[in-house]
Image (cartoon, rainbow, N blue to C red; front, top):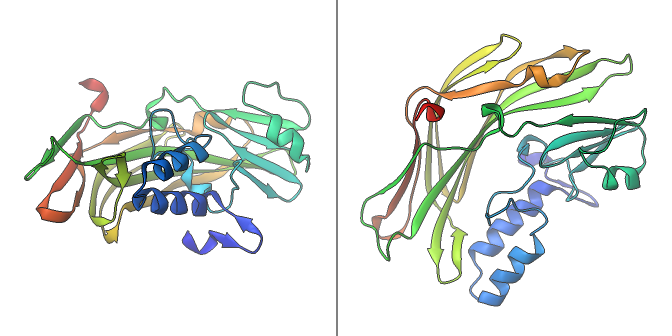
Amino acid sequence: MKGYKSEVGFLSLFTIQENYYECIEYATDETVYNNLILEHSDLLAKGSISQFKVFNKIVYPVINRDGIVQIGKSLYKFAEDGQIIINNSNVKLALSTTVTDKEDDNIKILKYNLQQPSKSVYCSNYHKVGPIYNGGDRRATIYSYVIVTIWPETNGTYTYQSDVWNEGIAEKKGIFGWKTYSTNNSLSLNYSVSLYNGISKITIYPLTNTGNYHIYYRDTVDTGTVTEDIGVYQGIFNWINCNIYTHQGMAGITAEICCESDPYGK
């Protein structure tokens, strides 16, 4: 993935996010810290300084700050609440179109239902272990999704790909608020995915990443071609056992977040 983050004359959203995380981690002045958040406010999810609005991070290496990438004559715009396909190279139309607009010959819109389990960010249980100072100055955040990406074909059909995305971000609390910080990371995954077209997958996958604030894992569940609304090919993401993300920093402080099975049944 990182091999695609930098092209001549192109700054991907992946690179923008990586640079933002690094700058905010080492911000030592409150003015600099606040300005970094303000400069990226159009990208950040409400109430977060670490989570970006566009949850489909699979496409981060190829989309720009506006969430747009061109493939052939079509423009693809990835937004917080949907995916927009402009069937020509009209950049102004792509920039101005939202998922609430009407479809026509040039515009195809896929709305995300963010209330569905397949699009949710959740953890049923959050706790810290080990010595905690200053009322708790370490935290871990885990994001998990089932993501569907589509591309229109010339014959009127659509190619789709369903992926699972899991991500952990390490943060510590300083005088300017919560900031990402480099540490030892471990992500232990045990989940199942059931797509609405009948495809399912069970994965157990331990991950470690030292000297970084960030750890992520992507797994493709299914690919295919459809002629109908791609929404029915989304899926349900379920924890099987406790899925744990931990990070350990200075003084032996460890933060752990535990996503238990059946979070919607609690």
